[in-house]
Amino acid sequence: MLNLYATQIETVSLHRVGNKHRSEPLFLSETPYALNDEISGLLKEYFFKPFREKEENYFCFRHEASLEFHPIYEAVSAVFDNPARLHEVSREIARQLYGQSNHPHIKSGECYVTYLTDVMLDNERTDAVGIFKS
Image 1: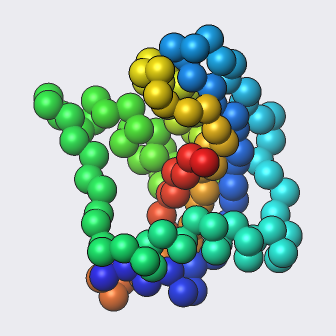
Image 2: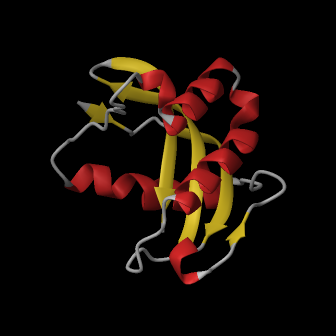
């Protein structure tokens, strides 16, 4: 069970990811987005609302050879080793997303990478990395 009631957004990085197939650009921010109480509240509502309204599904990274070779898994693992690296790693994640956007129907949009604390997962308090695209 996933409970996001007490979850806090500690850091958020925002990038603009275009569609590579349509030659749209990738814009990477230089610094993390500056949060305040009002923005944090709005982002929590925007990010977490879909998790309240749907049946719970957990995403597990997979790779045919070894999970160590999955680029997003590797990037997110680096964040858990050192949360201060979130912004640097978020840029890698945005590049990976851009590199995979080769289908003409993939829409461009903002990519948010967040470091979350106090996530309750199966009654255990944990930290998490959220990757959202709008």
